[in-house]
Image (tube, rainbow, N blue to C red):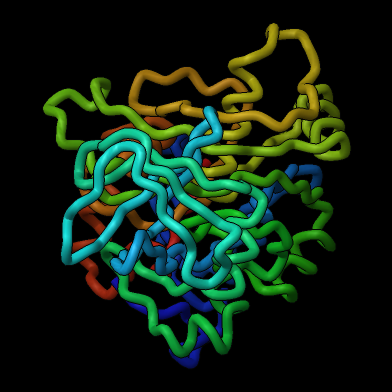
Length: 341
């Protein structure tokens, strides 16, 4: 599991390995990401998530005590999931913390959560993102980002098409695309559309790791998404024409299948800004997506369960067996990719 994006390791974005699964033919190919254009057809609709990751950690204080506060995700009820690191461990519901960087920003602790997390409320809420963007540091549970790179070359940690700040973890599948490769894809006649889903607490290791014996008993957190008028129209035209819709990342998959689940089968997709807590595991009936690009995932994660639901458990497990047998593949957010059709 690399700790840095590929371009900070002297490689091109689109130079990584890619394993391709064709479910209809039960076929597995091992190739490189730059060849993905060969698997597209003219008329395919490629849907990308334009969100990018923020810093997530700030210092707050109450009285003369300081605490390190990490933001993990927002909830549909206007609250936020956070973690507090303090030498004093005096946190309790109702405690009000004040930002060290901007004393207008406060955080009120509401309710203790599992895994030493808290449900909290920031006020005024519109100050949180700019404060994180300007003063925040980056604290990660599993991949420890280089703090110098994070501050000096932030664009390496976001897709080349990213424009919407708000994610608290990286929407990582899109990192593989270079501008040149996207131009080649468009020149082949592939249509490109954009949604926004801000990755949140679903990416906390304790949330995405499935500890329940039965996967269907797992729960994911809600995440905020936006689908604009133009993208809704593109999706509707593609479905009317019978063209394939390809999701780049589990974030796009969850957004598109949420759109499909919330409407009548013959009704068009509507532009909307909403929340999704859709959890996809084997047995799920896909209604919209025909292809999925995703990274290589950890065992017992909600991501690999989603991948198995789409690609078929037997084929996906066989592909991971081939990956481990061949060796050299890189996992997680800065690793290699899997393309499923």
